[in-house]
Length: 225
Image (cartoon, rainbow, N blue to C red; front, top):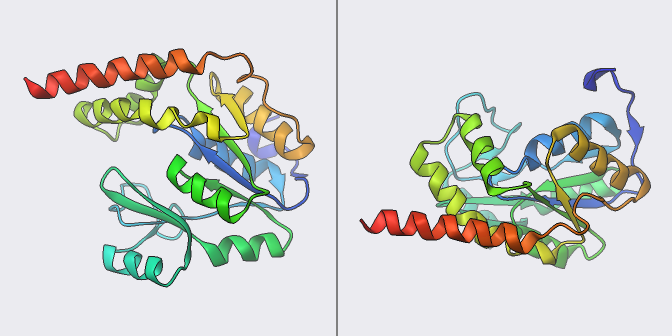
């Protein structure tokens, strides 16, 4: 049965789910696919100051706003969380999340570790999952396959992956995205039955972070030449 033909299944009680990953880790695609399979679940559309990319739609992929508007939202305390990532701001509307939960729908936040820390503080009952690639080489291939970053931008994202992934221990669960279908299946099991992902159990995250640090060092040395 195709993904689109699968019957939707109700999730557990309304819950805030937080998904984080290094850039290219697959969290956005997994979040969208999970919502397609589960009733009473929505993704929260973030606000961002970065430019709209080809193929994106305002209010669907993101709410694209200028920096002045974003800063006013911060001042008015309208954001549940926000962070600066790669020279642009991203944030989640507090009202949108609270309304969805009050209406009996679970919410998925697709955010980085900075935003996740703020969201967990605001919603202690949130369930957080850090999604990791099986290796740095796989992460590099996935970034290149997206076809929207230059080689220099890919190198920058890989160099930042070490610091991002070092925050994995702040999350409730670790999930290894070695393959999309398997990773999606683990997320479904978590949402529907509360079953913890098995792929991250026993995985040597420290070795993965160390490998990413080596990439960062190489990138830094190249930039100094």
